[in-house]
Amino acid sequence: MTKIWMLALLLWFPPLQAATVTIPVSHRPPAELARILAPLLERDEAVVPVPDALVVKAPEGRVGEIRRLVKQLDRPLRTLTIRVIQSDRLTRDELEAGGGFSATLTEGPIRARGHVYRTESDRGVAEAQHLKVLEGQPAFIAVGEERPVPRIWVGGQPPAVMGGIAYKPVTSGFRVVPRVVGCRVRLEIAPWSQRAGDLGDARIEVRSAATVVEVPAGRWIELGGSDRAGTVAGGGIGLRQTTERRHQRIFLRVDPPEGC
Image (cartoon, rainbow, N blue to C red; front, side):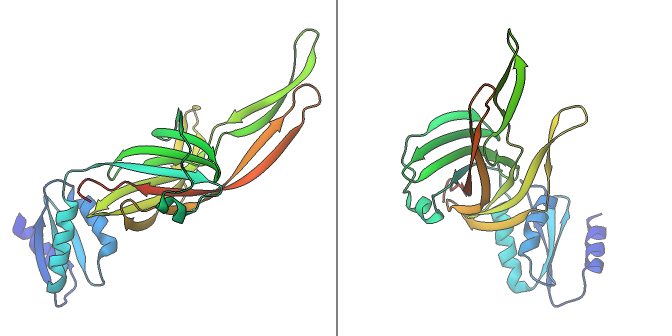
């Protein structure tokens, strides 16, 4: 059976001056490893998953490099720590330097499979999320705050018109899938939104294809930005509200794994 596999693969590959080798794998599914390696291959190189191995066709000078990549990737999965900060003033350089975020953080509600913290300092309002995720599994990061929605109703005895503010939960954010390659981290990043299903249950939908970036572990990157709206309102018949918008920058980093 193995000979049949090899013959079929050799016939499938286009003829070129290259070596064809089989690299055994022990810890990760071959199809997953082939998917991770695909963006790293050069033209006329190919990696095909077979049971318990990868069949690689590449120039002899590249086979050793691909073999080293497979060795780095083919290991037990790690639990990674992802940190996210949303701020209206902090910059990536300030985060790298460790400045501007020294205020004491108070633990808030759990959101997006982790903990959310919030602080105000001389560098403006900042919110930090601390997430733990298994390598190769998605982390869903909420962006923004609960949105204020004015409400007016009639109640009391005698009846009177009253007003207040209800808060709608965050319904959008980023999906991040981290993978470690040596002491670097490959991140698949895609926007997501949460939508109510037919039976009223909420489901998460990814709205576009993922962007892939590779950075050194422990390095902050900027994901993008979001607009936040804050509302202040008065009660009673004369309901008044004032909305202030802030543009928040969103930063993310993956803590260096053990050994880096």
